Amino acid sequence: MEEILTKDLGAEEEKINEIAFSQVNNLSLENLPKLECFCVEANAFDWPSLKKLTLVDCNKLKMFVSATTKTPELSGISRKSKKFQDMLGDLNTTIQYIMKEKVNYHYQCDTILHFLSEMKMKLGFGFGHKLYVSPTTRAQ
Image (tube, rainbow, N blue to C red; front, side, top):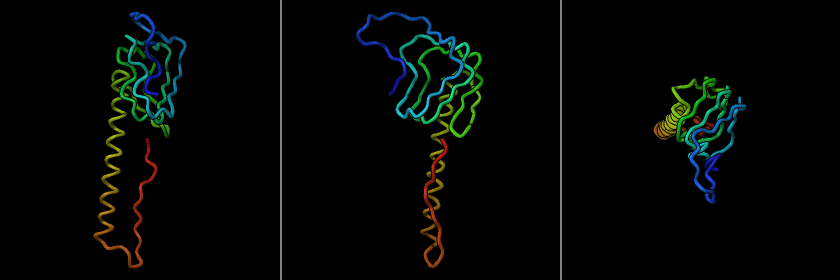
């Protein structure tokens, strides 16, 4: 699934000024590895009651929506392992920051693993000494 909401291809195009989710106060998007955005077609979203947004294993998420999103009650985004990211401007900016942080973390882990593997070879471990280098489950 790449989008949660999408335009009906067979329907007449209608211009929707704003979609309001006035009763939603908790939204959790979990285990959606192909999700790139919540919706690309709407003009604007209003989430006046949204207090908690949780994102877990949505590694391809690029943005929430392509237009304006109002989230006056939302103070941040909860993530895996109870991590919390304060809002950095609007919702899209905060999501983009989280995704960039995730990419940087994976790059650092890969660099460290590569360095340790090279050190293992250079130090010639093998005469009764052991150095185990293996990737672990990475925090999201």
